[in-house]
Image (cartoon, rainbow, N blue to C red; front, side, top):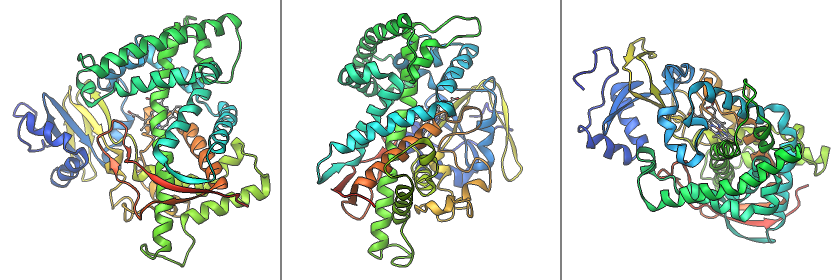
Length: 470
Ligand code: HEM
């Protein structure tokens, strides 16, 4: 610590070496809160042999989001994904190749592709909810996770998987998932059982996809899925991804979008139900006076049904503002990626809102936290309250200072799947609310389980009863 230049950000005082690690594992948000209060928007925390410099809030975090890859890079901090994604893609390639591969992601997720994805999302959600009984109790988190897996199979992995290999591929992807434990971040190749199973699953997936990709190349068949984009993608020199790299790219998109979307869908439902029930029981302010957010969302659905019947298209989903802000507010309160990371390739300067400039030394890990930043009371009024109206155009609390809302990241590496995620979650809740009445069991939504790599709610039981919304 003594070797750091005087211009470096203040260092958080924790017991050296192991102390930082233990406090960090004990709960990163409590730790950030403590040092944000004592050190300000930019501070450094020693964790094992590393130093993590935090940039907190909308004044400091733009330095994180706007920095070029040559200054702050993702590779070193996200490299632990290589055994899961596979060789030759994303974090296992030089930055020029990576930029080209990100161009392929952008191509697969661009606006005009969404219209065909929406048809697949709607079909999956209709089939899924159609198979529910007339009434019962479900764990919303598990149910929506199953639905998002099915949708991802159809839109990303393609119809061969969805129609022929669904169970097998879902099982193997689950094994990949289980192979990502906290230890993997520091030691991705450590010989533990979850890593062994991850590697075996990755090999099995490679066999299945080799056949699928090869057949698509031979038949030269065009499909409207993400697989199609990767099969036909060309680098500037005219070369193509190998079959295994096509699979690697698909796994990367799947990992970026699957848990994040299913968790945000779950929170949307839980928070709409919780705030509705509390307001009706008089536990929340405004009880009995104004419509609850759930009632506003239902009214919006009724209007849409009156105009378009049961049809759900890209344009119809886009028009659902109440549902949109309910989802965005759920993401504000519970962003599944609670911490975003980079590696400093060179010293770089950060100026905080009080005008101080710090030089963050080369070799630091740089972190910003959507989960912590979204709960700053000076940015979001009574930040712990679920209040979708705060994001509506009149209030727009998220837009007063840029980078206040960072649930989808922002700047150079902002989420490429944002439109996809909103459309998918809107399709899910439109169909669910049109066909069922829901009730949260108990007064409170579950807490966030902070031990996961992607943070979602603990088990989330809700009661459902079939209805036809008119
Ligand atoms: C990047 C959040 C859904 C694809 C990101 C980042 C965040 C994020 C915070 C930035 C990571 C960083 O800066 O280190 C979310 C949330 C989602 C969601 C909360 C759902 C509610 C999706 C979906 C897809 C997707 C559905 C694809 C189908 C990507 C990709 C990137 C990314 C490709 C990398 C962009 C880059 O590094 O340039 N996402 N995401 N995401 N997301 Fe999402």
